[in-house]
Amino acid sequence: MGAVGNMDRERVCEGDTGCPRALADEGMTQLTPPVEQAVDAICALGCDVVRAYILALGSGETRPEYVALGAAQRSSLLAELQEIMAVYEDSEQ
Image 1 (cartoon, rainbow, N blue to C red):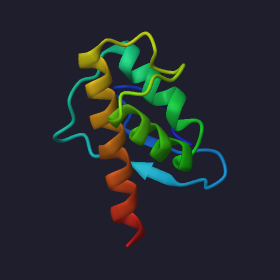
Image 2 (cartoon, rainbow, N blue to C red):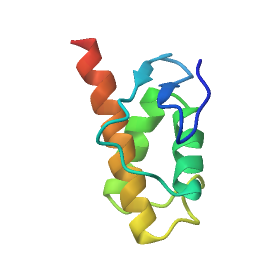
Image 3 (cartoon, rainbow, N blue to C red):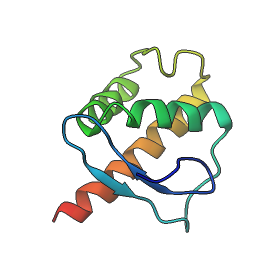
């Protein structure tokens, strides 16, 4: 499992599915540290949980991993999680 952070876009979802995810640097937006921390915390829970959090964020539901984020940061978090899972789902096909 690679280190996680703005400089390293190699990530691995942990948990039940063990789903790998690799993100390309090009086209990636810089995330604020609180958003990056939320991404890391959510992704550490596994891909199935990431999918649930995408639904929760999309419906405006609050979860502990992002309760402190403002609306713009939650929007960034949602976009980042969707992009992460899109890369993973593309690699499955």
